[in-house]
Length: 571
Ligand code: C2E
Ligand code: CA
Ligand code: CA
Image (cartoon, rainbow, N blue to C red; front, top):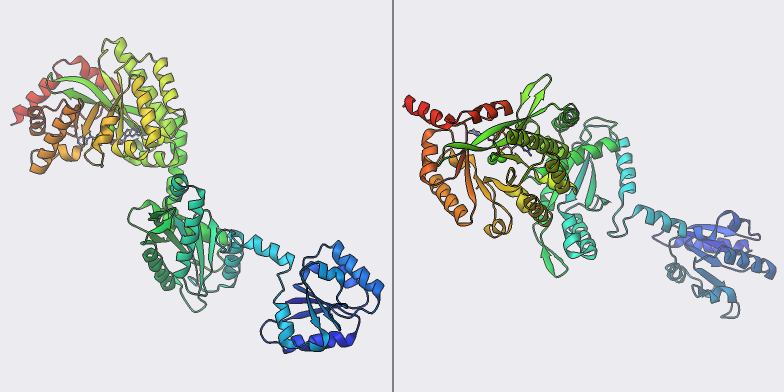
């Protein structure tokens, strides 16, 4: 504790120095301001925890010191040491209301200790404290945490002797959105406390982002891995209990990533980036709550980044093509429509299937421009079909959930349709159950507006997700597409046969059409026809083909009959 003594006699300085030296515990640093005020001018009084005001024989000096303290607007407590009470106490100091008065003849170490308890951290230290501490949780903040990690890394000499754990609270935004910011703040405090209980006393927990915490591990004797693992498990256990917030019991999950210094001299930024990558992978992979960083993660991420750049370039260079797989009405045995399936005509790697790029396009948001290109291409092809006299053929395209996040989605689709003069009932959008269910309100409204534009909406891969029928009924869905995993086994697996029959009758009772996808055999097509499925799409009739091929198939009135006949001939 830093103490400033204002007194003009050496004896008084010595006495206080002795008393302070005899006190146990806190160490004191006594600065003496003797007969001039240069000390106060050099070091502002606010730099001290406490001011002791001793004997100042000259009244003018006393006044000058007081003036200087007032000028500095000092809030530091002043303890006056006096011979008589209260006349000797300085009126100005008393008026400040922050002072204590000690009688000189009774001055003992315990009494002085009691007075020193008045001390507050000097202003400069308070500012420093605020700068390093997260005000909500009282934990150290991001900048202090970085400094700590930097120091620890600088001292590390062996690999894996420094570890960084990042803890990210999943879906935290939803808490703020549903219960308000106050509840969010309360929850963060509770989570911080709970994580802290999982750590040992020598670990310091930091809050380095809105919903992100960090712990630095250090073990000069060896690897920190086992210590980290123990904490990871403890944190997972602790998070299993709900948090009482805003009169609710809220369950929260965390995703954690750990990075270790693989070689000496690793930087704070690399450690943070690695732990962050491991944490993101833990978050992405369902059922995994934590991951230790490995180099493979960086390699995979770099591959994805390269692919992303390539997709961006490919969109500009128009390297994508839209193939179509015909849909057959199994009562009339005619092609009534086709599903557009995108492919990438890669300059070096040949024709790539969507499995190679759709996921990355979705993750990076590039599916938005790519999706517009698909809609544009389908509309252009539809228009050509109309001009050729096929004005009742429908073309469907696949739409990802990410596309609905684009605020201009519906308007842009409307513009594209206008440009190609697409009329009602010609264009169809296929959406998966997850797209329809997770996005809630925003998707509901967009679907409504798309359907008002005359676009049919179909529910793709039906049976693989978990749609609620209440929801399906509310949405403007006109087609259910049975997933090919059921269709592929209707003739071999009784459960799947029952499910397919149930889906067909359910769809019909809701006034929806049913399309079976992935039919590969005549038996499957036969089963579907007998059970009144409306349309069938699958390798049995045709693989996805180019638009030129589709036009060719449409000219063959007996395409389906010949296809069936050729299969029958084989039997
Ligand atoms: P999907 O929408 O379920 O498309 C049907 C997939 O099943 C297509 O694969 C198709 O070639 C394949 N298929 C059709 N009939 C059969 C069959 O009889 N047997 C078997 N084994 N497979 C059959 P593809 O073309 O590789 O597309 C895969 C997925 O990529 C699509 O699944 C769709 O989710 C996505 N995709 C394709 N094009 C687009 C697009 O333009 N935008 C978006 N967002 N996704 C697309
Ligand atoms: Ca589809
Ligand atoms: Ca599908």
